[in-house]
Length: 202
Image (cartoon, rainbow, N blue to C red; front, side, top):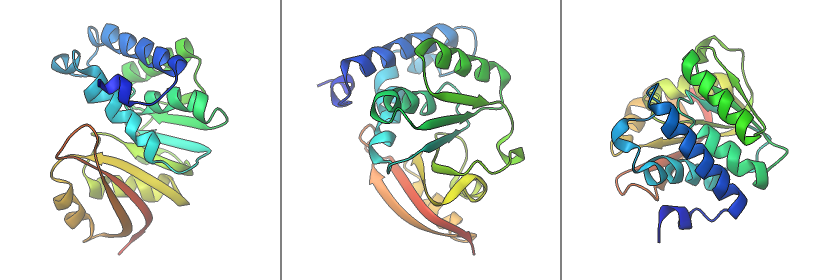
């Protein structure tokens, strides 16, 4: 079974994910959206890895993805939400203007209910996200700074992390109090997806 089969989405959503993957491949020739080495494995390493975050999310009205880069997970989330939660809003924060232009192009071409904010995360007014995500953006202590600013009180942060996530959690506990539910990643044996709530400073 391929990662495409495991996504458990409709044919329409699969078609949009395929279009998006092709768009990423074309743009990566010009700007570094994903590493050239990972282009051939884009479904497993990027699409499926991003899609599993949607499955773990509670019901939401506003999902904010920080440091969206090449659209993983932000655009993948917006594609799945187009059918699964069409009323939901997706906000992508990306300060790199070239990547922000790519994200806006993808949103327009795929007809997604999403917007891009091309500013620095820490300089934005609070975004009040029900769900906050960030993939390969920063370590957990830094992510919790952003979480305090942009996650609604009752919201959930969803952060995919690699094999060193326990060390990041240990470091973060020196500064922050939060509830943590680590979920095993479906795409990497050593990785975990951290579901975080009730964030406050120690």
